[in-house]
Length: 233
Length: 224
Image (cartoon, rainbow over all chains, first blue to last red; front, side, top):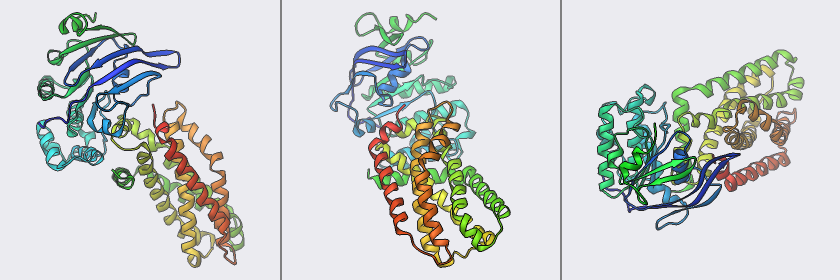
């Protein structure tokens, strides 16, 4: 797998996000240094997805400031360097696996995209289905392709919303191995996890969200495992 | 990335998706065909009658067909949250809009091209002598309908009653385009054809104003 671009960290400064009377995020302030692999845990509705979408610049916070190391506010250069695997696959079902990746490659201006697409489909175990329409894929295959799409742009900051969704045991092992390699190569990773995820061991830091606020941070107190296990089922 | 290249990539994506599924184009063409045929039964197909009512009916058919086509324009991007993938890409939000607009104009214009000879035959109105001027009016009218319609489609895509909201917003807002297009078409289909430049100028101004507004506020149109 290729090395990511230059490292990219992200800083949330007193971020609030309200949806009418509902508070999605409540004064979140935290800094994620470049190269960190952060696991976000918390119950449903605790604000994990909102935090990831704010970091991806998809949601504008109601108040507070989002800043990226070296770049400050969001810009096309930041978006070029971040990738996201959301809960939905972000794939066009009427396109083939290769066409979905080609579209991403074109929009991001990825060099040698044909070669990269071939490598990534091989890496994701989808090379034999590169010409198949996505609508014929199983949920696990779609998730693998969604992850491959996110990796195509060699991101410096990778945002993952429950990336293990739909993956079988082999798929989960593949994802863990892939993310471990990315982390070791210096890519900043922020991922939301649920339950006892197979991805937990690769996290270098853990955050627990409760009602839109950071309730525990392993960088401040406790261990990664302690914070991960603190989510009462 | 240049505006033209980004918009071309996205327009090509729209065309590829539509040519693969043929959902919108088939529905729209069948709809406009049915409307034009029904109109030809409703009115006496003499040239004078057709010249009087034809342009208005033609543009009403185009408008309804356009609203059919524009409805799923952004809604289909929400199915797998592909709109987020587009918004994450390092391109201006206006390019996303421009790509969709180009594809919508292409589909509308194609439907109009196919329907024009059928209208001419059924309504007994000769169009060959003013064909190029007529196509110019169709193009400018289509850009007006698709321009505003694509923007409103982006806005209504997030709403709960979106199927109802788009026509409600679209029909009154497009009244100026409809009037100008109908007047320009009526001039061209008159017994002594005339090129009513003031209505052409109005259509150009409408298109420029709405494209500029979308360029300025495109980011907000696509926001969650």
